[in-house]
Every structure is written in structure tokens, then in C-alpha cells.
Length: 150
Image (tube, rainbow, N blue to C red; front, side):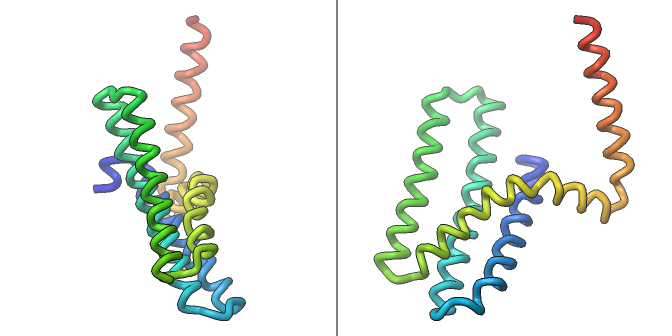
């Protein structure tokens, strides 16, 4: 389902989860309250994954239905309001460490930067790297041909 929405969304979510596991494993040894750290971090990772899915829906909606700019802004504000609400509930009800939750949410940014490298690794593991390189080469040739025509 996620791949139908956006081709790179499953890879992005996988990168967010991998980031969460790495940060959890690295930090669990350094904190005093392991339960608060863990729950805070996974709340943040869940938020990051949810934000990625919501952004994909909003982008798909904007492209296919031609949503207005006001609706896109409204959806962005809604997304950030949910993040603030979840952070508030995390602090108010002592559900987890808010700093760890913030680190978890930053997984969305890290995953966005790492996704192209992650994509190449996945292609290499699937044995499709050569096909992707040929496709990219063909796209570059078509782009160069279009430039010459202009």
C-alpha cells in the first residue's frame, strides 16, 4: 500500500525504523531511566513515520487533485499541531523522555538524507543496480537531447 502511494515511502519508513534501532541501542547504555528513554524514543520514531506517511498523502493529494496552497499549508499546520500535542501528552503524562522523543522525530530528517544511499543498497541486494544505472543513463540521454532541441 505504501509503495502505491509513493515509491520511496517504504524505504523512508524502513530507514526511520533502522535509525530508531541504532539510536536506541547506542543510547540505552548511557541513560539512567531506560524505560522513559525507550518509550520517548519510540514515540518520536512513531511520530516520524506518521509524519512521513501524512506528507506522502498530502503530496499525492496536491499532485493528483490539484489541491490549493491553503489546503497544503493547513495540512502542514495540522501535522505540526499533532506533533506538539503528542509532545505535550508525553511530558504531561510522563509517557517518555521528551528529549528522546525529539531525537526520534529527527529520524525523519536523517532518513530523508540517507534514503538515496539506502535505495542503492537495496537495489544492490536485489541485484537490480545495473538495471537502475541503465535507466538513469537513458534518462540523462533523453534530457540532453531535449536540451539540444530547445
